[in-house]
Image 1 (tube, rainbow, N blue to C red):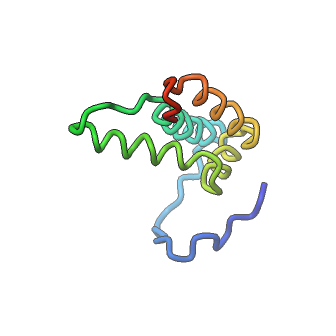
Image 2 (image 1 turned 135 degrees about the vertical axis):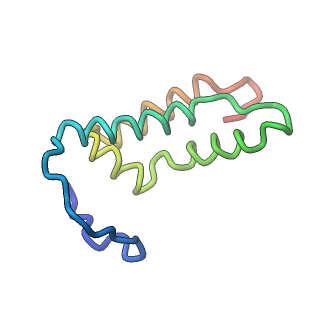
Length: 103
């Protein structure tokens, strides 16, 4: 895996004691949950009402996130091949797209 040290220089570093009892598997499960949430949002249908504008924006942001460097990092932390994940997600998005070409 790449070294991500100093990748986000503007990030706030929170000091304090580090819990070293957290297992690698627990961390992997956390990143799997992050990925699962984003993918489930990306695969949702866009609402057709103006009242659902916030939901539409969230769905579009999730779709735009697929394939970004952050997406790749989350996949790596989850133990999933980013290229494979991106291809599968894009395929599922294409399958669920309405006939009008809206994706």
